[in-house]
Amino acid sequence: MTFPANDLEKMLEDASEDRLDIGTFLRTLVRSTAWVPVSAGEAGEGPQIRTVRIESQPYVRVFTSEEQARSVLPEKNYINPVLGTVLRNLPGDWGLVINPNAAFGFTINAQTIRTILADEGL
Image 1 (cartoon, rainbow, N blue to C red):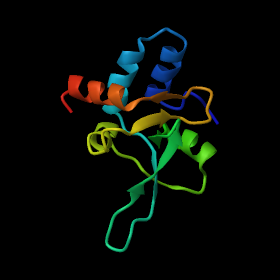
Image 2: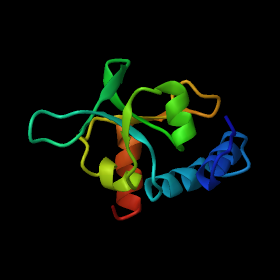
Image 3: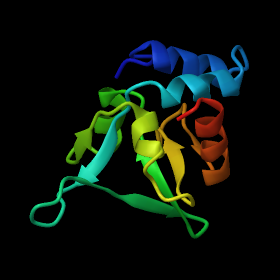
Image 4: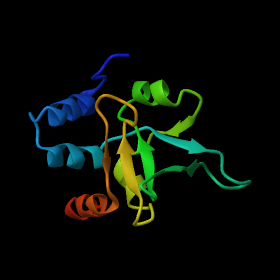
């Protein structure tokens, strides 16, 4: 697997190594497409975003490329939306896990997500 596979991952790498402000990366992330694992919904419903629990709080797994997603969850189905459109529709207490189980991954709590969305007018 090649990392970084795209410009977003290059920004993530730079932010992880203090060559880029993490806030700049997060503002770019919410306006970028991301890979979000989903499961089939009930009859008549669309795909359902699933959460993982971290310290009893719900978090959505988000990947910065298909390569990152398939390396962790190869059998899953994914949607590939602009992340901000997904985030603004999530419950207010859900956080994000970006590239879980990867060298360049981290968590973002729900409050930080809400702040970024508000700052970006999303």
